[in-house]
Image (tube, rainbow, N blue to C red; front, side, top):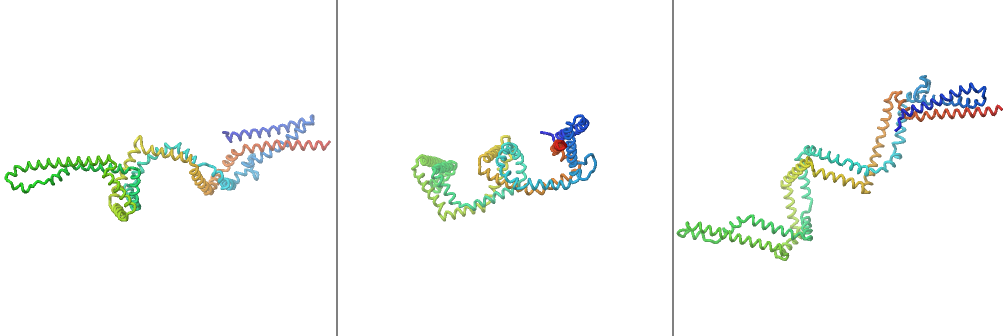
Length: 428
C-alpha cells in the first residue's frame, strides 16, 4: 500500500526538477541563441514552460499556504476558509453519498443472512462459551418465587383453556387405533397384580376375618382357653392358604387375559375403552365431570407446588450442567447455532426476509444519521488548526496536484514553441 506523504514528496521533486530544467534551458539557450538561431525554438519552449510551471506552482501552493511566505491576497485559501470548507465538504458528502439513491441499490445487493451464517459458524464456540458462562449469573439473579408464580399462572391458564374431554378422548383413540390399547391393558393387569402382591397381608387379614368359626359359641365351652391358640393358628393357616390360592388364581386369570386377545377381560376392557372414548368426546355429563376436574386442579395448590418443584429442578440442572465439562446445554446450543447457520445458508425465503428487513433498517439508520455525520465532518475539520488541515489535505490530494505543475510546464512550453514558430514564419 502506497504512502501518500512519500508519494507527494516524490512528485514534488519531479515537478520541481522539471521547473529547474526548463529554467536552466531558458538561460542556456538564450546565451547560445546568437550563434545558433535554431536554438531560439528551444529557448521559446523553455521560457514559456518556465512561466507555466511557475504559474501552476503558485496556484497549487496558494491552495494550502502563502507562496514563499508572502501573505498575498487569495492565498492559503483552504486554511483561511477552514469553516466554510468544513461546511461545504460535509454538505457534499451527505448530499451526494449518504442518499437513498446512492445507498439503496447497494445495500439491497448485500446478503446479510449469509454474512450472519458465516459469523455464527466462526463464532459459535465463543457464543456457546459465553452463554454457559453467564447463565449461572443470570439464573442466580432470577427470583425463584416469581418464576414459579409465572409458571403456575401459565399452567392454570393452559389447564383452563383446553377441552380436556375431547383431548383425552382423541389421545386414547389414537392409542387404540395404533394397537397401544393392548399395552394399556397389559399395564393395567400388571399394576393390578403388583397391587395384589403388595397387599398380601391385608388380603389374608380380611379372609381371616371372614372364616366362619363360631368363636362366641366356642368361648362358652369348657377348656376353650386351651383351644383358642389352636383355633387362631387354624384360622391363620386357612387364611394364608385361601389367600395364596386366591392370589394364584387371580394371577393365572390375569396371565391368561394377557395371552389371549379374545379373553373376556380383554374384550370387556376394549369395549369399555371405546365407550369411555366416545363419552370423553361427546358426552355432556363427561364434559361436566372433566370441567369440574379442571376447576379442582386450578383451585388446588398442586399446580403451585408442581411449578415450584419444576423450576427448582430445571434451575439446579442448568447450574450443574453449565459447570460440567461435557455440558449437555453447551452441546445443544452448539447444535442449535450450526442448525441456524445451515438454515440461513440454504433457505432462500428466510434469506429474502432477513435481507429485506436488515437492508431497510440499515438504510433507514444511515439516512437518520446524516446530521450526525455532517456534524462529525464539520467539527473534525474545524478542530484542526489551519496548518494541520492544509497538511492533511495536501497529503491526500497533493500528489495529483503536482501533475498540474507538470502539465503546466509542458503545455506552457508547447504554447511558447508554437508562438515562436508562428512569429518566425510571419517574419520571413
